Length: 117
Image (cartoon, rainbow, N blue to C red):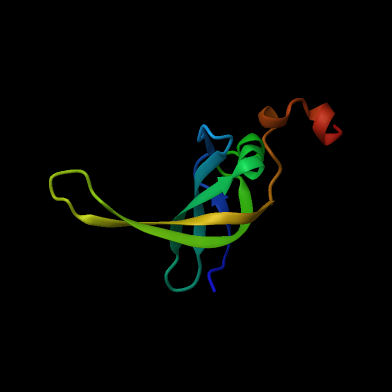
């Protein structure tokens, strides 16, 4: 079974790219805090598709708290510099995302219109 559940904060804003065939892809980096004897932070690349990517880019910013459910995707690639080493790229393809913090006001318009203030 390939299922990942994570909760953390975005370490950077979601970057959207149009693949040209009507598909949108969004990429970001998620910071996950470790607890216990080995405290620290792990950083995980996340990938979102379509409307989910568009909404995440619109309503989330660096530092936004999120919870995601997805699956791991890994691929090997050869580094293009002189050493030619083989590298591993691992990311989480997001199936579900829950926004745990309010969106930044600049992303959604005026406070009166969206938040009832």
